[in-house]
Image 1 (tube, rainbow, N blue to C red):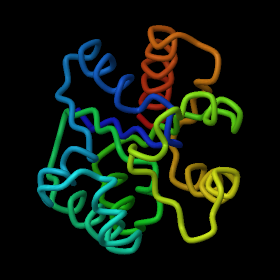
Image 2 (cartoon, rainbow, N blue to C red):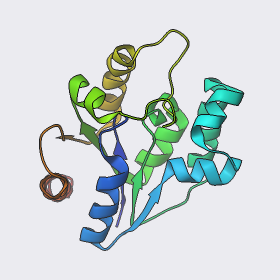
Image 3 (cartoon, rainbow, N blue to C red):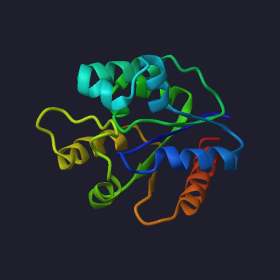
Length: 171
């Protein structure tokens, strides 16, 4: 089976939903943020703080390009969409699912922004991040699922239904 690649804003629930989705479908699970930490031996926030955003994005792309997975639910970091090569690599082996949340929902869910490892370019606000990333998520997404108001179990059902529908449409 193809991979299921979860993309979306910080706080969308990619990691949490990914684990539940993998269990539901009997698939493997991997979180690319953890892959980056394993490759660098550092926490995401310390990479950003000590080496900068561009270095972090380079390491993120390198880590993703090193993956050769199948039958895996892949939870990505919110900044993955800045790496065109990484996104093409993920898209070539999987279905890209954009877990969409509103700006207000993102702010509500992000209570640990200083330690979470969120990529902010100099002078960028969370609103700027939201406005900049939404078109990129939409560009790469095969499926878009609104996750703002539903419990995870219902979102998993929506993802599974959408994947099955997309698979049937594409033969």
